[in-house]
Image (cartoon, rainbow, N blue to C red; front, top):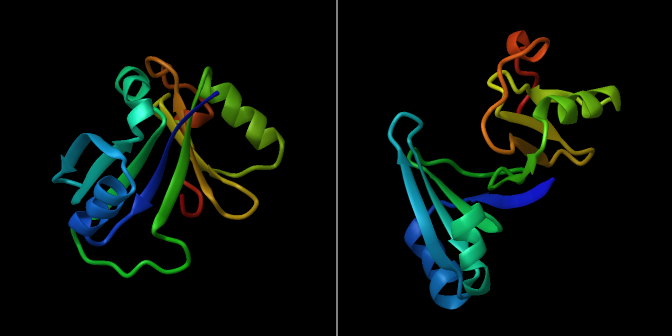
Length: 146
């Protein structure tokens, strides 16, 4: 398992970039606009982590800006922790066998979401290429919020 990033939703990207970059000292390493999902992702890295960020896309802070205004309550501005795993199906099976609900199953062999006992959303991503779709995951529905 390898730590990837922490996602935080922000309302004002300019104000957030001023805080995280100009004042705190992080540096923007990449940005992605998603027209269909109506959001922008901005990934930041600490200066001493830039080489690792460029090579591995970790460790990073992901700022997410939803284009439609939203007031974040109940910790919704904190998005999720993300980890790469060697075998997403084995990781999800181990969690499920331990009583953890798989909120977003790895239907695509690439990504899944679960929640910690405190309700923190955890994104699991397959290391390398996605695995071939397999049951029971391929036909499993989302459960709850992720």
